[in-house]
Length: 298
Image 1 (cartoon, rainbow, N blue to C red):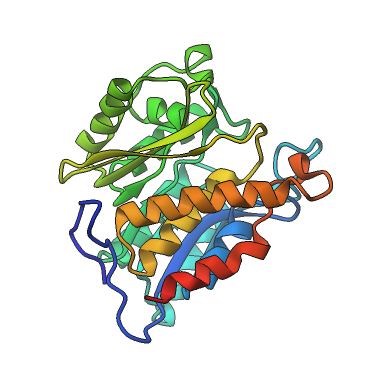
Image 2 (tube, rainbow, N blue to C red; image 1 turned 90 degrees about the vertical axis):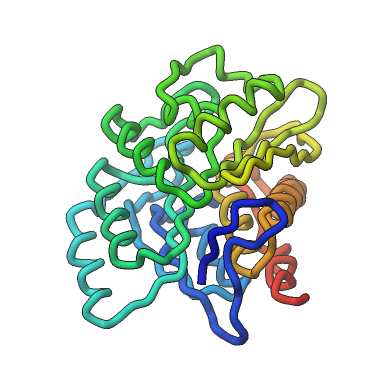
């Protein structure tokens, strides 16, 4: 069951005995490259969750590789989700990420309507470093911004936060270097739109630190930071949000969950650096999944 807690020292989900919570993971499926469902399924499964995928698109590889192929699944989703109703599927959390078309936001709203008590986690995957991803139209960005307003947990980067708030993006946002006051303003703006808990990710100031700022409707605002490693990897945003949700579904507090996610991604990036062609392939996390499973041990 979910709770109405929005403070960092309270859980958003109360784990009950041996019950295995079910998470609808509304993401794309990528054949090669570490991202989306390829991250969410193993991470949440390790946290003792029953992951129920809702594929928003099928990709041959992630889009950093040339010549990628995408199949849009928008047309099949109504029948896909109606079939769930026919067999009595129950859902405890709805976790959405990359979307393929504006109509997919309507399908997520359908899931919300079917499972009104489910925790709503929105990773508004649509842009980074001041640029919108190549498959995203202005209509899809607007639909994603509207979806963000109903989230229990929202995890935007700086560019995505600006899009949701209707602010311009571009070179000014590419460096992701903003003050504490500006971060507070952005988080407050997102909370004012109805989001219950905001995690503003990836703020960098050239001092070897990467910062995430967390705010809630309960008035809390705090920073969680990690060492900034000297390379970027595809899929770290998906891994971050999946780890955060894994901790939440294990009954950890918001603050514990944010810290766990940051530490896990940092360490997974170090593991990744020891793999061949790691900067193209993406983040490798598999050897660390035991840490996710350990979340269930209190």
